[in-house]
Length: 394
Image (tube, rainbow, N blue to C red):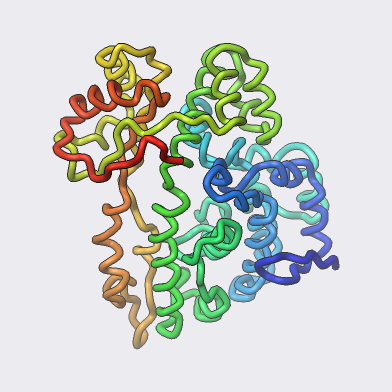
């Protein structure tokens, strides 16, 4: 047994299996992948990593595995430590790109579990890679502890992200939540006594999205990074090797790639980011932008042509329609399972308000802001801008 000091959970105890997994190159790589991608450009303290988060998820999972069959407990604990090893550099900043080129999301990790040092460790402890992969994807009923509507993954990252960014929205009583979770009919459900703690989790997640996860500076930097990565892949970089890079390795690769990618790397290093030419909500658009998500490159080219700039000087950011996965959670009331939005008026209101956080952005170098903005407003048939922002914005 080894004890690690953690700023969120105080002391985290690692047993023999956990220590063996933590020492693998795949898990150690997570030390060099920032949890929040480029959020440190907004919140300088947001330099925590996927490694810390994985340890926190493991720590919380230990409190819930008592509800499952003893033979599954080691599989679940291994899954909690390994659930993020499929992330590419800068975490979610490159996720959509990796899925597009590899057809695999970050939680599709069975291939990684069947080779290298991790495979050897799992064999030593007689653990099944396919079972662990199923737990990570939430495809098994015990795996709901790690991947479901209210899981230990969410509990850790919300509290941890709030702590390192310094925002005041991460006040979640995760201890109470864990105490009030249990299985009924192979479904991870919440007892009525944990409803208020669940409400605070959903409120926290709702507020963290516009404040941290979808802050416009983070979205701009992520869009710049993703476009540079796409440029490199289209010019010979293997998507599989790209996915296995850490943040430092990818930034070095970007700097040495030449051309557009090197220019973006320099901008990210010096925080000379593109600016918002258009930034608006869904009600201000005259067209259904969500349906155009698969044609973003074409949109960028058309806006660039109309503005008289190069296509690489226009970045269009159309997020997916917001969804609060926790809305599907079930609460056990008087022996019956009730959807959480039926059990809580607060949760129901959050469900209706989630569209308020959605923003479409068009980003460009500051010198092209006015003409790109005009072309973008024309393309998206913008009725009104939701917000005036200063030319000297951060």
